[in-house]
Image 1 (cartoon, rainbow, N blue to C red):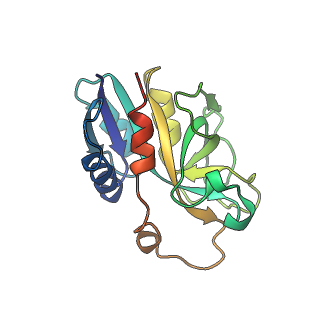
Image 2: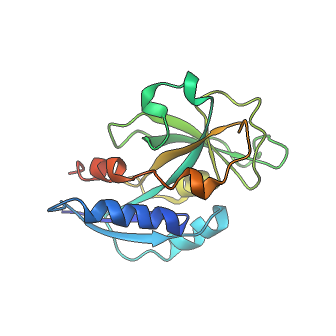
Length: 186
């Protein structure tokens, strides 16, 4: 049995993790779910103050580049993915000189995707389909221990064709599939 910390950028993600955990009888691990706050700085501060644990998992929503109609079933709304490659993007959409891409081996049997971390919403018209866009992954990848990893749940598709209300969009998304995958860890 491992002590697993699940770090979520927002409270809504924490609530979804806790809801999923409450529906799994006889969990194999002990869990603590901590809200880090959104962004690179909040993630770094949270990681420096974590209580003792065996594994830390960054888990939260992520936008993916592409149209839902063009993406495979395993990359649809609410599906969990593992981030194994992270890059840091600047305000103008270019890689920071000190932000070389970080690649890590997969820890789970989930689809593995690349992620762009930016302090500003990046233009998505020139990004490769199936790229995940968020604000925390690079910092987590840079500071994490070897056994730690990132699970993202697809929340929306970029570029948005119409304006969306993010919190309405994610209301029906359940984190049970993502949490069940954590239960498979030894």
